Image (tube, rainbow, N blue to C red; front, side, top):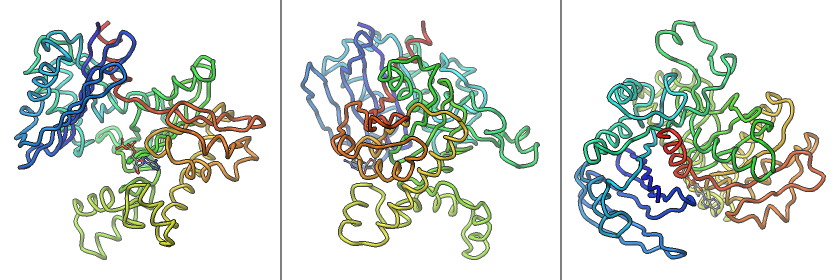
Length: 399
Ligand code: ADP
């Protein structure tokens, strides 16, 4: 068995999945939540044939070291591994790789330092990723560890799309440019779309829509990302659960002057209190629908704004690509929300985008096409699997 552990270390949680890469099956998975709080929670799932046995442990997990050490213990005790030394590799999700990382990288002290150097570009994400790597290196020093970057897939975006219209020194001295995120997911569903369409990825032009709590669109030409909606940070672009997406940058100064909020408060407002939550008070899409169905006008407006923004990006990226083979929906909302998918496609018939309402309503979490036969653009619902993509990239990196 080729066993690979994937670690996604966040500020107060560590998610993990253990794969057997022979057959790409999950052996175990779980999450340690509320790290550093009095009541920590560790959910560990053992995957056996078609069964998943879940165990829950409620106890304080003081820090990331304690969290990773618990994960190691549970993997051993549940029989998923007999020793950590059985692992062929550990793959770490790293949010921001800046311009340095175009590919997954085997972690050594130089790579780790470069990731640390990127912390100012992603202060909300990279510190937790670095912490996860540091602890895993200490816990399992002899196992090859690979950093897989959310930004890497977007390294192919050309300068005319990644540069902002700002003085050049902001780019050369301060690295201000579009990087894009969710690259692991966009790459994974693009590959799946190619196999679903039975064509080589290098021949396909796609728009991939990752619609989860965070959301982003990518324009993919001949298999390579050429533009994406998230920017220097994951705040730009589509409307998200609690992030505003695109807005007039002058609003920041106006807010500072008229409300007295400081930079940190404005950053927090735009990241945590805006998006669907800011418009209607709910950031979970199912709750937004419930409110809208109950006649709450703010929820209705939030849904209209959400889909309108996506539709604008589909139009823009169609123009960028010139020819479009498929639009791919993924992420919790993209995979499950037939209403959102329909709204995003309605009115685009002149572009050759024709949704089949019946197929769309029937779509479940399996890969599915939801276009009419007369549609010149395929419409696909493809469940993302970022953890598997990280494991695949970790294996190809150590090979
Ligand atoms: P994350 O970005 O945290 O990985 P997910 O991809 O799991 O998020 O997506 C979370 C979003 O998916 C939430 O807004 C949730 O409401 C939405 N979602 C999950 N299931 C459904 C569903 N059946 N219908 C509509 N939205 C759903």
